[in-house]
Length: 424
Ligand SMILES: Cc1ncc(COP(=O)(O)O)c(C=O)c1O
Image 1 (tube, rainbow, N blue to C red):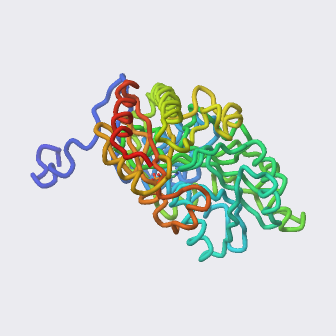
Image 2 (spheres, rainbow, N blue to C red):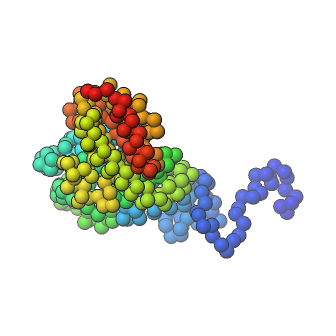
Image 3 (tube, rainbow, N blue to C red):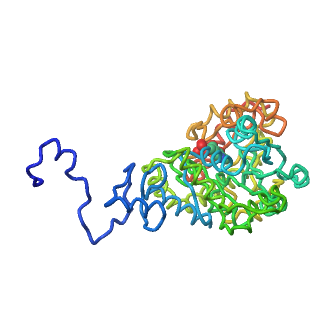
């Protein structure tokens, strides 16, 4: 039957299903929304599954647009392989679950994004994995927390919300010395300012919801792994240590473990979100430099203001993390800062936040506009106030994500809001 003589119903189903031939390629890669891919003949399925022929099968496992996102973020982080996820939390939880099994132990920073803290504290124990929380800036505390069954050391390059800078080289030395891997959440600085893999980390994770996409219109995450040499990595040494140095089963790279778990659990990003993120990250270098420049100026303004108590920003010479910031961050100290008004109460924080006119109250970060958040009521809400208060995340703490506006307008909004706040 010729095409013309097929019925209306059949033509509606099949017509327009293949792109027209073209010797020219689109300047921008298309969005591959297809959930599945077609094969010309049966054996081709084996060829693609076994990797003898390049090809895609099913978008939960791989998709060309998601591969492009993984390639782009891996390139920025100077990694060897990346796995993309539908959120930063999916990237964190799946990476950890792929690398720590029942009976294993994790050493994690005590100041982390609230969701990550809750995962380590409440979810991992149900899976038989215990976490010891430490001050990652106290290297002796980290050293003494490590055990023979420690599989991972976990930290944030700059901690949410106190902006402490992690000593990545020292932490990787401790982790590797114990046969464990160092996993770093690089969300707050992005690979523009710091590439943790260059300092010994094994996996660098970004919530791409933040700086990499950068426009507050995508939720996503990417885990990037360091180059892997079988038998030569900390992960393999950890396996050997546990097996008493005996015979080793075929080693699988951390990236392969994370990808296998992701393909099984299915926390896959949508092709549209992957496309938007690649578009967003084209300008990440410009955005983060401008945010950093504005944040440094705002941090200095706040630090000198008589109504402001403490300001957390590694770019300030007075910060206890300034030396580590200088060592690990290049091109700026990032767009995130946090501060408390004198007295540090919830009332003073509320008065300031409610007085801001241009700067919006937004419980996320790293978009193009300047926003504020209240960690105690948002990102760290699940952590009891006494617990978070003990390490500095009190009810008076305000977190600022400094945007790329003209600096004078940002300062003016904080100045008028501070004028409106009663003196403590
Ligand atoms: C440092 C950090 N890591 C991870 C996450 C989680 O990312 P997502 O919201 O994309 O799941 C967040 C969220 O705010 C964060 O601040």
